[in-house]
Amino acid sequence: PETITVQELANRMAARVPEVVKSLMKLGVMATATQTIDADTAELVVEEFGHRSKRVSESDVELGLEGQEDSETDLKVRPPVVTIMGHVDHGKTSLLDALRSTDVAAREAGGITQHIGAYQVTLESGAKMTFIDTPGHEAFTAMRARGASVTDIVILVVAADDGVMPQTVEAIRHAKAANVPIIVAINKIDRPDANPNRVRSELLQYDIAVEAMGGETQDVEVSALKRQGLDALQEAILLQAELLDLKANPNRSAEGAVIESSLDRGRGPVATVLVQKGTLRQGDIVVAGTEQGRVRAMLDDHGQPLKDAGPSTPVEILGLSGVPGAGEVFVVVENEGRAREIAEFRQRKLREHAAAAGAAARGTLDQMLA
Ligand code: GTP
Ligand code: MG
Image (cartoon, rainbow, N blue to C red):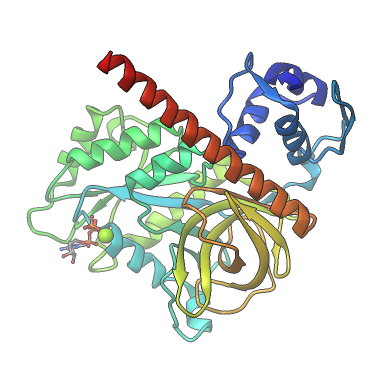
């Protein structure tokens, strides 16, 4: 079979190797620059890059050169995507609820709150921010492993009466590994035994120096229970977002990540997705991991139907063939045939990987028994 190295493929597309590797990961193929991939895989990568590829002969993959990178002028400011992490019982859910209660859009929607895995808050000023609800540290890692980095900012919740605990440290590690800036929310400040300065000095041990300690990490004292400090926390988020200069091109086909998914008795497979690039529209054909389908309906986090969703918008979509895994990347493709082709290709790759893993395991077992 015809093969090409990842490096050579990148060269021919005038693309960067990490981008090609990322695209391969979306297809379920793990490869480094020097490894070879088969022509079928290469063709899919080329198409994922938005190129038109035509197999001229078995030995030659002809590639177009129009890149899919968005030009600077197409980029528009987008809301930050924020994940709340922290130790058990330090108040993550309470803080999310408190922040959500500040949403003016929720008031307009009649206060209906739908529990989906992500939601957007619109402030009085009109500024928006998107929160991902308790993905858990495992989901966070799984998303990163799949190449879907969805979070722009991590809010590290530390209870002022309890201080830095094991899962606080774990959250710090995750955020640092993902190179995501942290804002420390020192919670439960209403408690008589609250000691925010102890939290600040404990954090130094983990290389987090808040402003009062001469560092650059923002920290905010809050009480999720008494709804104190929420404005300051939102200010901190907006400031951090500004520093990050978050932008995306809304005028292109959508790409994003699956936040959570489930099989609903009445509605079939339901996936909460975060649009990261482009605009997702009702009727679009999407591939998410090994699943595909036409977006039959789209709902926002208030359960209201939506026709389109731009960058940083979380939406629930109906119409997929099955339930995609959390952290899977989704992309809009041009037609249903193409969607099925990619989904089937991925399913085949998955089976091959499983078979290869099984064979390897049997091999070691044979060796052990020999
Ligand atoms: P897990 O999801 O189990 O990890 O917990 P969590 O971090 O989501 O904490 P949760 O919001 O469930 O809060 C845990 C407990 O702390 C609850 O009893 C809350 O009422 C309480 N709590 C949360 N925030 C505050 C606060 O600001 N002040 C006080 N006094 N109690 C709080
Ligand atoms: Mg919770």
